[in-house]
Length: 394
View: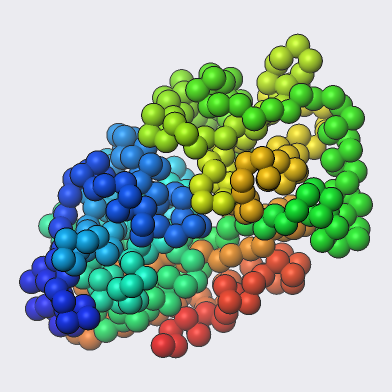
């Protein structure tokens, strides 16, 4: 595909034209058509979630669509920030990670810390994606942006992006790691799969929590929204991110409105009904996606409330919640100790090239260093943790 091709708006795919369209709201796209492109592990790019994200008044949202014979075969969200986003999406962080300057559009996810490249499996790996990225680069140029940043991609999508190396100058950096716990059977089955020492500790943490007599429930977000916002604000403040609870109440109301059937709030309360801790999750296509955690520190009983609500209760209730995976957001040593697998996330920057394009992995040993620091060899699936140099082999 040449640079001239990138400006025509039509591309040959299996000898049939792909037409590119730019729309201003996800409401213009039927939910079933959009979600048909979204894989089981990509809830944070689902139609319902993006409806919520679009309501946040910190960025202008647009959507690049690839269609063939009137059928949606690819989709790419684009965002230009008006206000400072959450810390991991701030342009200053991406500039440091990627050694770049200037302004960029964000392509893919703007919340949720995972971007999947949404292309129909029937359409192959590159053609529809190339068409959408070319259109997105034109939008970036019209906004006087230097190009696109695609944050937090899984390894498979990095390899897909690398196949387009002859079109743009592309730099890719290891960014972060997500933790996913596979659930098989009961809590006892889960514990039995842990190493012996860790199994003992896990069972101790579970017994201590149950001994305290805290009342654990699955509640609807709309029914406990004010309490949840207050506890999440307390936790964020403790970790250096001051978010007023009135802003969190607004955010949670938008989430309920965008996806009323999916929020799953796990709570633990004292005998007199006071909420001690909570987690806000979304159940979607067999996965439970953690989105927020809240703690009322004055009421904690040193009963491992955090890990019981984040991991042990969802595992115990997996059948009830119809889930077989628990998506635990950013990985940590503590999550890997408790049986989660680690999956690397990569961030890329695309810029127009004056000559022939190319792709470059920045700091190729960064992912290996992270893995060595964590240990826990069992927690690193081989297909996800291939050596960075092999990402460019196609």
